[in-house]
Every structure is written in C-alpha cells, then in structure tokens.
Image 1: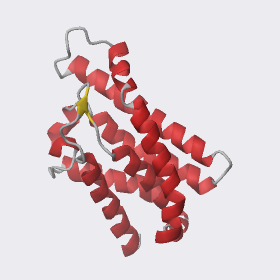
Image 2: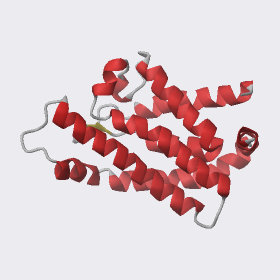
Image 3: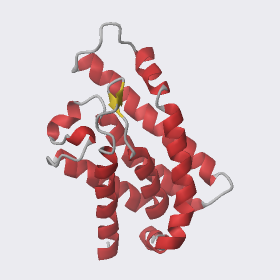
Length: 188
C-alpha cells in the first residue's frame, strides 16, 4: 500500500468514529442513531472494495483496542458483547459490497449497491443483536426474533435516505477528490 492509501483509509476510519457519535443520545430499541451506514457506503464507493473494507476494519480494530470511537463513545474488547456490535461488523462487508458494485459500473450499480448495503447491514446487525439479547444481555420480557426485526422498521426510512444521499454524493466526490485514481491502483 502507498502512503496516500494508508492516509485515506485512516481518514475514513476517523470519519466513522465521528459518524458513530453524531447523535449519541438518540436510540431506538437499544440501537443508537448514527451516520455510520453513510460513511461505510461512501468508503466502499470512493475507495473500492479492498480499501473501503480495510478502512472499516481499521475502525473496528481501533475501537476494540480501546479508543472510544464506537457509538455512544464506547470502545474496548467488551464492545463485542454489545447488541449493536454486529452492525460494526456489517460495515466492513457493506464497504466491500458497495466497492465491488462501483468497480464494475453497470446500469444497476446504484440500486444494487444501495439495496445490498442496507440488507447486509440489517441481516448481520439485527441477527447479532438478537443473539446478544438472547445469550448474553438481559432481553426485555417479551423479546423475540420478530420484535428484533420490528425495531429495525423505525430505522428503515432513515437508512434508505442516508443510502440515497451517499449514492448521490459518491460520484460527485469522486470528481472533486479524484479518489477514482486511488481505487484503480488498489485493484492492481
């Protein structure tokens, strides 16, 4: 990796830390409202699958090392036990998937990338949250798999809007910041 690629990955890891704590006091069903999906999608779209997912992995690693960069200024190995940790894992996969779509540029790049980004985030994150509540966090009395997914309905409009915003911004940012040259080099 070149120095510029390392710096860009570090920048996106730092942006993820900021995006995680934009609204640290707002939660729905135990899940804080953040801008992390926007940043994960942007990382994949701007940096490509390899560097985008690497930047999200760096965010995960820095947080697990103890830096308070996860939502609500949390960090450390204990974060693995948090019901929302699955969403952090999903951001690595989201950036990779979006990056793959943008590397192949087809008619369905934006629709496919956006749809799979949200689905991946929800499938990994919600299933992890469900398992966390069942096995190691005290679940609400009437908690079930259906309730875990019904909590996510409240987030869907926000996540769709954030995804659309990210997909609109990516091509504009590529032109301004010339990230496409980074992505092309990272593929070789």
